[in-house]
Image (tube, one colour):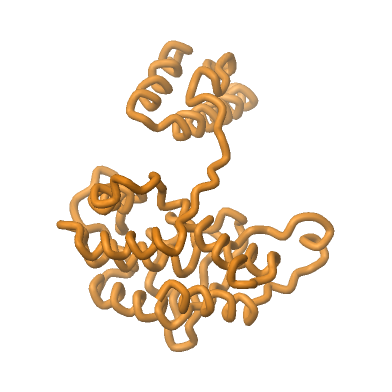
Length: 254
């Protein structure tokens, strides 16, 4: 029953609410869904086939925003002073900075994944962008933050359990919870260039380079695949080197 006019209305609704990148993502997924349906002879044509990015969110520009040392200081001050900014949010933001992981990897994490005694996070393949499991070394400040979150969330199986009734009935916080919470912090930083939570990964990567961490170690700290021949033949995961790098970064943040 879906027609091109429905696809267009859906995309324009997303664009109008100020989420052009999300509109592009939705278009890509809808096209793939209907391509699958066509191949399986479930529908006769793809109603999204005529649309391109110009009809959705437009061409996407790569972001280059990262936070300087001075901006990090202001961010932490604002988190302490923002009214209604829960301690769970503050701890989660600190962990995103300290570990340089993707937001969804943290918000959906289960307590059982964390071995605090040995300071390791066993992140399963099902929740990584690379579809491969990875052991993430935990610095002392990261272990402290995780310990507090586990205590606050007890007896939930999730590190960041849902705080109120949600339409999607997720057992953990919604992926947009931290974005909404950060708006309270940003209101105290009006004179600072805007940033997103995803920019924390670029912030960590930039400072790791400034701290003298080798590029391939810094890339693995962000769970990026090593490109080229080296990525094919070098299966060493640099765990101890990553532990040293993230400890150095954590000390800088502290």
